[in-house]
Image (cartoon, rainbow, N blue to C red; front, side, top):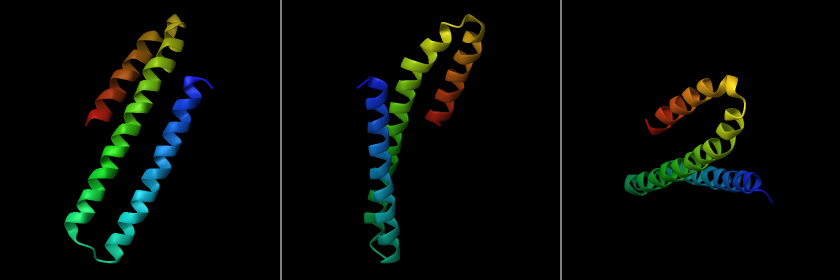
Length: 91
């Protein structure tokens, strides 16, 4: 299996886990659980989303950019896209 396929599988698995965490948070709110517990779960979801974003960014840099750099006419535009993506991600 290629690293691209492995990354895709890992991202999808992590997204499913986050989906489950979100449903758990919804249930906690419905059941009026302690706010501190809910905030801890929200923090865990944020950390998981950041990890997924990092995996996506890793793939973008390692796979998409090199492919584009082979096509000289798009290189500058793609590098600018990468910079914009990184800036948006770290906000």
